[in-house]
Amino acid sequence: MYYQIKQYLKNFDWIIFSAVILLSAFGLMEVYSVALGLGSHDLVNFYKQAFFIVLGIILMFTFTFIDYRFLKSLSKYFYWLGALILIGVLLFGQTINGTKGWFSVFGFGIQPVEFIKVILILFLASYFSNLATKVKTLRHFVISGLSTLILAALIILQPDFGSALVLLAIWLIMVIMAGFNKKYFIVIGLLAVILSGVAWLTFKDYQKQRITTFLNPSLTSCSQAECYNSFQAIIAVGSGGLTGKGVGFGSQSQLKFLPEAQTDFIFSVVAEEMGFLGIALILSFFGILFFRSLSALKKVNNDFGIYFILGVIGLIFTHMFINIGMNIGLLPIVGLPLPFISYGGSATLSLFVAIGIMQNIIIKSKINY
Image 1 (cartoon, rainbow, N blue to C red):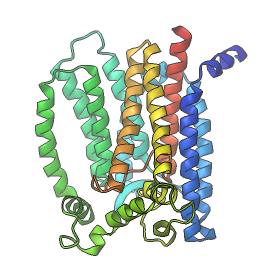
Image 2 (image 1 turned 180 degrees about the vertical axis):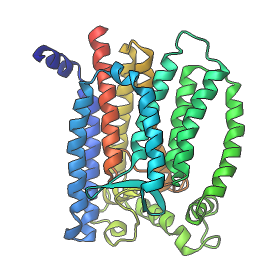
Image 3 (image 1 turned 120 degrees about the vertical axis):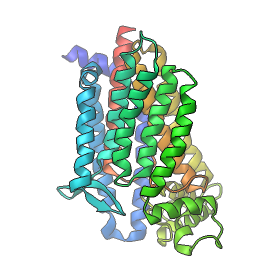
């Protein structure tokens, strides 16, 4: 047992771990900064996030020592359990900001969709790896797509279009890496147009306003309420300059002009308080995480591990890309957190679990390399 622990720690990728911890520390600092503007009594979110990070680290090391092959064998059961949980949250969940996507447990809000993203990666990695020696047929393409659409449809009903979009992005990344025939992707384009129309019919008014504001953001084309979030985020980003105004001194966040400053728009807080240099630092941490994870693929000797790592990278990159894009006005606001940085227990814990499984894959590959 001691020898096994020693082997695991020796082959543990401490650079990936360091990048994740630095991103989490960065986020915790900004959550504290936002809390200062809300008053000392609101430091509860800072303490909660610190607790989530510590618990996340514990979960990460726990999953590091769980054989990924055991999780792979249970992937189908995790999938159906995830689908049942999504149905349960629609029936019995708590509604926050117009989205019925939370369970309230002992005063903590648990958002199942964040864990569903990891479950989908686990399921697709298992499914595609089982097809490694077979021809990638249309049947396999359709089955994996429908499996993703089932979860995405349940999430859209909450409604949470942003998270549904992330699931579809994960599937698209993984089918591309699986090497399916390119002509199948033409069908995907047509389906995307049809599904976009169907999704539009299910959107609430505020969600439609977010998209119309993005497409035509001029003050004459929308009410102040519709444009407010986007404008304030852009102002915060632009006002930071090279070095920023200093942590705790951002006018947009401290004077409460910037909405959802701890979650959706925490990137704008970083930009305002720490400037371009702070943004560059965050992006460098993400870059190290992506580069190191991709580099680890060279020694991964099984298809499941390769697909899973690519899925996790796709998940984190998609979240990062969309969150930053909506903070600087390049993408519509869809309410996705910035990985490891935004306040939120479910997102934080699920990402640490994903990193833990990825570490187990890397460790076992190094040992057997």
